Length: 104
Image (tube, rainbow, N blue to C red; front, top):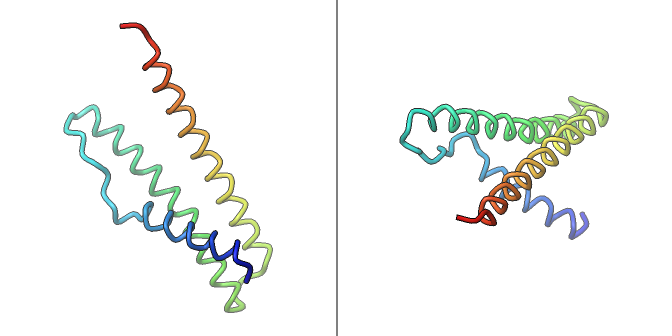
C-alpha cells in the first residue's frame, strides 16, 4: 500500500467516527430549532450511511461477494456526497461572513 492511501484511510476513519450515528447533535433548546436540528441530524445520518455503504461494499469485494463495479459505484456516490457537503459548508461560511460585513 502506498503511504498516501494510508493517510487517506486515517482521514476516512476520523471522518467516520465524527459522523457516526451514535453521536448526538447539540441541543438548541427552542422548538423551532428542534425541527432544523432534526433535519441536520437526519442529513448527517444519511451522509454517514453513504460512507458505511462504501465500507460494506469494499469488505464484500474483499471476501468475493461483490464485484469491482459496485465498489466504484459506491465510491462515486460517496464522492458526490462529500462534494455536496463541502459546497454546503462553503455557502454557510460565505453567508456568515456576509453577515459579519453588514453595518450595524
